Image: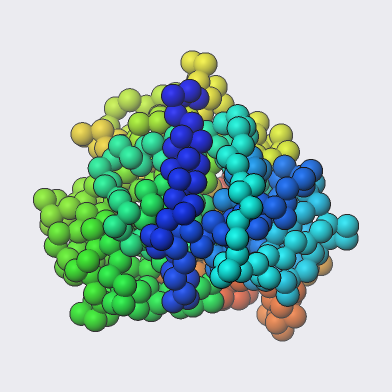
Length: 503
């Protein structure tokens, strides 16, 4: 890891230096909080966890100033946060809490309870900023950069979530990479943060603005995101947007009513970006600069980028209308491997994208099987198998093709179809199913459950499934087929299923 780049210098000291500033830090549900007010909460939470023996602390990730203050307090103490989405089933929370062996949960809302006996929940909603007098006890503790900054649990193919570990050094190198791609964010900028904190894109949406002393405007968890974003654009004249392309796709029909004149930068990631979408978006402001980013959670949010501005918006580099994902960040590296794991160096040859560098995760939390399968050494360098198929264009820019496996993105969240199939099988007493992604009339990805056998009243099974997995993973369509088709190798023929049901 690059020893010249460290988390304390890149993030903690710049943010800590704003602890007495009246500059706006957050706008949350139209409530405004200065950096000084933010750090009033940080100190109270810092004191509440002082002496906590857990290095890993779970956090109910609500859209609340105290949630962000909790992250800063944990990082000041050299601890790690593990976000929990309050809207997900308690069973999922319990799996994560037990996996990381913590006995502590922080929550900005005392209505939430610990789903695991013996695990303490520390509510922070009683903490106030008005009239609070600081004790001066906060310190930026010295810890090494291989200390974990956060663990995000993603969908696992076995039905059990897998935890992606990211270190303070990973985050520091990510910030450094973002500083070198042409972004010029300052304390004058008003930045959008529309994501659930269990989605790694959120890390960029709050870390990058805070490191620059900018202001962050969040979207409530239960809000209709694209309509709320339109309101923020109109009322607060946002200058920096970080979004998944589906958010833009939903806004395009209302482009005449969306205020984009103030926008300087669009940062887009989480799913393939089409030329149609980005061209339409730039019609609202010809001077905007967009970055089409690519990156799995394992490589600290983003690791490649392709710049789109007024010089190339008429003809952005694309194949099958999927916009190029560009070239690698300074602190990352990549290569393409063919089916025999030979390195591809020539253009126009598809291969699996493998990633390396100082942003790369040390591995999955206590998951030796995944660590063995997903990471490999090539010439002494450790690479991560992304599962994404790409090829080099003639100019060596990277072109995205598709997933190698059956992992998909739903509203930017990563979902492994096998997890849903496995859980349904357990619920239904062993029924055979295949979960298929399809594109709805709005151009967004949804899921269909294709079940082998006679049609039956599946609502009870669907209800049970919804209690065990996040809402975005529950299939919207439930279809039945006498026999699920297999290919010549005896594997499920997904192409045939897609054709049969016109998915």
